Image (tube, rainbow, N blue to C red):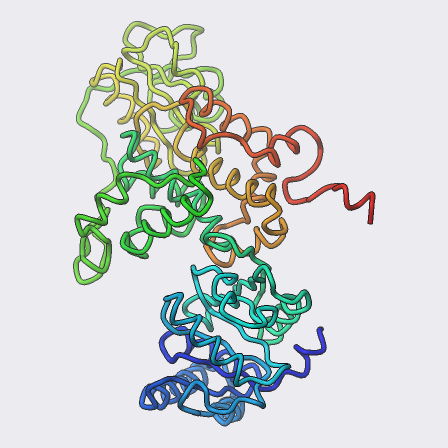
Length: 505
């Protein structure tokens, strides 16, 4: 552990809103003396009372002993004014409102008041650390320390060095974060830092799928949850954060990277923001909310149609064929379908199928273990389509019906998630292990995106992106060189590999 992190004893937290209170609770529980400061002393008093009440709740739940809670409460020191003499502080963490001028003015004053050994940290979630530090005579002592809300529960902390941050500070702050029981990642001072940057892969692609009319929001979410294993689908996630928050972030990251197509926002996002369809906070977004509870449309139910035999292409016979036969569906076993059979083929065989009026596609990219995605082309006879849907529902699987596209929904979402992460690694904005940790802890994905790409197979992810790139001509699907270099080369996406510095160092 860095010596500074080991001996650090006192931190001043400036700002007593939700973030300031959470940081204070974490630091006090972790053994630091916490000086709470705000321009309104009554806010400081309220914050101390809130944090003390949180310690009492921890005791009641058996997560903290009464003695530990009493000791943590004793480390809370209300000091009032932010510039109250702070010669004894090892660290100052600013958690005031997200306004560049406000933060610059505060840090310029703190620089004059703090001791030389005091490290200055901003909890900004979006403003460039370098821009904040530009107001300082010595910007080397400033870094970003981005906690996530709620701080005690969200273990991830982004440590963000600015362009002039002293070289020892990021590692020292990371060690202090570990000392407090949280998990640090070194994030770039770039638009979105690391978590918000990596998160563009899911939500921007979901909005692109919506804009193409491929699937409804509920089906995108169900596929993301049931097939990819995400805790929350992209549309319900946008409803949770609020489109008034999410869309400006998308635009900020897109413009911050000089209109890189992979981060391109959607007209849908801006239109919904301007219409006030913000999500939970307004009661209406991609879903409606009654007393804060999402009203999700019911799952597809079997249509009333006469049963028809089902013919499966060889890719599906050993899996879906067995499943359908066990539920009484007539499955043809001949080399060619009969004249009345509904034809089910894997998604790659749908385009150019010989009987388009009675052929539906099945997404087989992730197997058929959970939700089935049924793919419809415009040539399909609706009666044949309904018969195919009824057969699949009879097999006891949930089914999402979507429009045909070069690549099914789940594979598009995953490929975008992996490609954006590969782009971050390619630009050396963050280490592969930090990218994966940030996404797992900050976004709740079942795997880090690079690890996920390795699990699925870099070659398969590359194939999806190349299909989309060729079919649409859209540069948003341009494969990252990081992915291209590792596909088929035996080097995992999670490894940096050899660089010129390894030969010269």
